[in-house]
Every structure is written in structure tokens, then in C-alpha cells.
Amino acid sequence: LGKERSGVVGEKIEEDTRALVQRLTNGNMAMTTIMVVAVVGTGGIGKTTLAKKVFNDETIQKAFHKKIWLSVTEDENEVELLREAINSAGGGSGAGDARDSNSKSLLVDAIRNKRFFLVLDDMWSDRAWWNLLREPFSHGAVGSRVLITTRHDDVARGMQAVRPFHHVHKLYPRDAWSLLKKQVRRVILPYNNVHVCYLHKVVFIHSSGHTLISCMSPN
Figure (cartoon, rainbow, N blue to C red):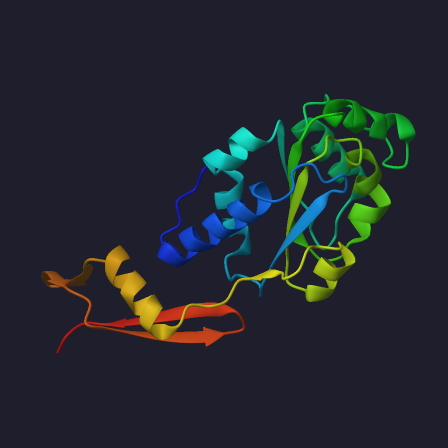
């Protein structure tokens, strides 16, 4: 998964990344059941960005034989999801009907006895896990981990994720202002000649899970 640098998450996402990596790797790696960890938060709050940071973390890369990222959208297609899982696991490109045991066997063969780290991003229900993915992924080695991102606690509960869930919250105004000062040094305003104004005040408005930013230059 390509590495990305986010300019809007700063120190908080680094702290959350460290906490999740520690949780995923410092537990009982010999446990026989697949451990599921859930990242929960409203849309646009940064769950996927956080999951990508965890996925690309060096400790995660070293701890697991297979790293697999699957996007499980609201209108998920089981055939496409299975094909993506097989390809990501290195099992080849062939996938027929998702209910076809021969197709699922390609996934089983790719992860059998391998410790895997699976990310299921943007889950709207636990249906794909229980109906499609749970059985083939049960053939992985002990110590395998699943990280999900979802907007809903009900999905995390349905996935039997370990408690407590990792909730992603909006930044408080003081933290957001401190973060923005580190990211934005100046604003260039086209007015006759080009004027350079250092930011003086930032107003943060949080609505429906999104942070809107209004900038004003000094008087």
C-alpha cells in the first residue's frame, strides 16, 4: 500500500498509530483465534489515514508474513472482494463466484500457515466477514490480526473486536490551531502586487464529522 503523508493529522495520528501498533503486536501472538481491532469514528475524521499509517509501520511490516488491504464499501460486491483478497494475498488472479469453494481455496492456499495482517477498511456491516472471508482466513497462522475501520460501534461488536474500540475524535480547537501553525507558514494573496500575510487567526467549525477552516489575515 502506497505510503501517504497527511498534513492535517499531525502528532495525534502518530500517537494513535503507536498505540494501535503496540496493541496489534504486543499481545499474545500465540492466541489461536484471530484478534480483531476496531477503529471507529464518523465519516471523514481520518480512520483510513490512521489505518494506512498502521499498515505501513515498520513494526507491522516485520511482524507479519502477509499484509492485505481490502476496501469493504457500503455496496460491496462479494465476487470483486474475493478477487481482491486473492490478489492481495498473492494467490493469483483467478476468482469465480464468491460461493465457489475452488475460488476460496486460492485464498486459503495463499495464506495457509502464514501470519497475516488484514485491514478491512470502511466496513458498513459484518456480512462480508462472516459470509465470505472468515472461513478462508481461519487457515492463517496463529498470531494473525485484523484491523477494521467503521463508522458504527455495531459493526465492531459484530466483528467481535477486542474492547475497548479505538475511537477517532476530532481535534480540540487548541490542538487544531497548534497543528495548523506547524503546517501553514504563510498565505499568498493576489491583490495588485502579491502580498504575503502570516496567519493571525483560524476559526474551526466542526460539522457532521468534518472540520471546516476559515482563515483571516492580521488587520
